[in-house]
Amino acid sequence: MKFFFSINAFPILILTIVGVFLMTYEKESEVAVISTNFGDMVVEFYPDLAPMHVESFIALTNEEYFNGTTFHRVIPGFVIQGGDPNSRNENRATHGTGGRAGKFFGLGNEEDPSTWLIPQEFNPTPHVKGILSMARTNDPNSASSQFFVCHDNANFLDNNYTVFGKVIDGLDIIDMIANVAKDQNDNPLEKVEMTVRMAKRSEVLSE
Image 1 (cartoon, rainbow, N blue to C red):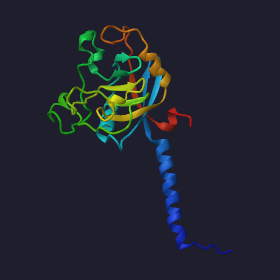
Image 2: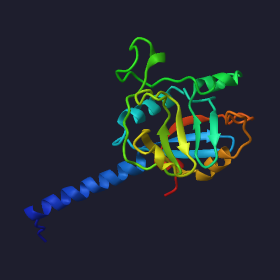
Image 3: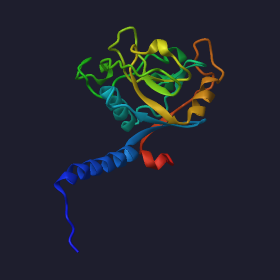
Image 4: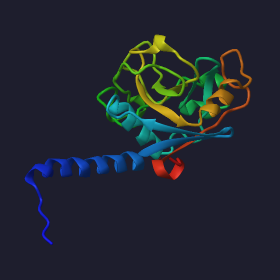
């Protein structure tokens, strides 16, 4: 029996192979797992929208930079915010005042990592529940390591803060953290500590 291969079928074969590859890549792409005493949140990233923010977050995660830091600002119906190394301190007045980028992106002193910041990468992705976005000062180009996860829709933040990922598993954990008892500065009375690690998507999600 002879088998014939039509030249016209070649592009279809290539597209099929590429499609299978992309589906495998997406399934096996890395996600971040943010672990707390309430449970885990699994985060996927948007490198096409905010490549520098994604790169910085992953670099800091691989440094174990976030481990032992806390969600130091929790506002029900708005956000839970964390990622500040100062939140390890007993002096709560310092919580929310620290952080740096995971690499040098042209902002700060290249020889002093503590000064590194991330240029803004604003994009039209809406701030809805579960969105991972970057905290900053009034300067658009001042993002460091502090991030927030939306507890509800916050569309007034759209195009003003950099969205770079989303919680795809563990939305109930956001609810629990957002509703803990807190002080007058929205800082939980009992620390909500985190550890963050990278993992293969298929290792932590059953799809």
